[in-house]
Figure 1 (cartoon, protein in one colour):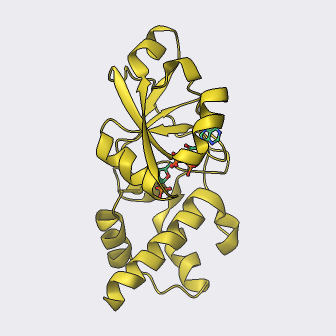
Figure 2 (cartoon, rainbow, N blue to C red; figure 1 turned 90 degrees about the vertical axis):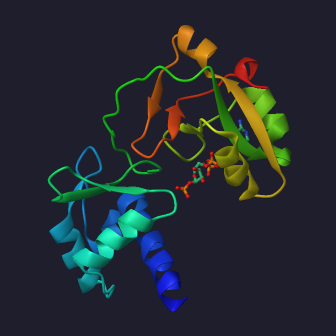
Length: 180
Ligand code: HQG
């Protein structure tokens, strides 16, 4: 249990460093969000986090949402999505399924139907191909509500969609007329 807690703590700290504030440990990310594993480990340890390559691999493999990825050669690591700092993940536009889902809470429905789904503090609006994920996302903040997004219609109208390596669909803004 203690180990589980530690893994979760380390994983949260990795999110902080790889998505939001690399400067906390004196790290910098390249324009696509990558950083060298060796440098990351060095700086984490200098900061007082006891993490070695093996533990890092465990965290990446067992993270509940597969939030992190290694480069093909294993030398670099990045967060797959969810950044607040300015980076370009380099994903190619994709044709989305006809319907995607967004989980939110009832108190946001009024502003959402007034101005559509906005990316708020993130770089994109996050959508999922399945309802279960949307349900979980919506439950984080209270009474969950699942919105259906007419992604196919949006795509035909020229909106761009991207899908991350861990299966999250991203778009810039969902106008209210595409929501149900
Ligand atoms: C809402 C987590 C008012 C939106 C999750 C959401 C997901 C509006 C909140 C991932 C609005 C933003 C993304 C509008 C949207 N007016 N509220 N016009 N448009 N909203 O956290 O989608 O743990 O930035 O409905 O599990 O909840 O980070 O986005 O409730 O996968 O990996 O504003 O973040 O994953 O909240 O969550 P968020 P999200 P990680």
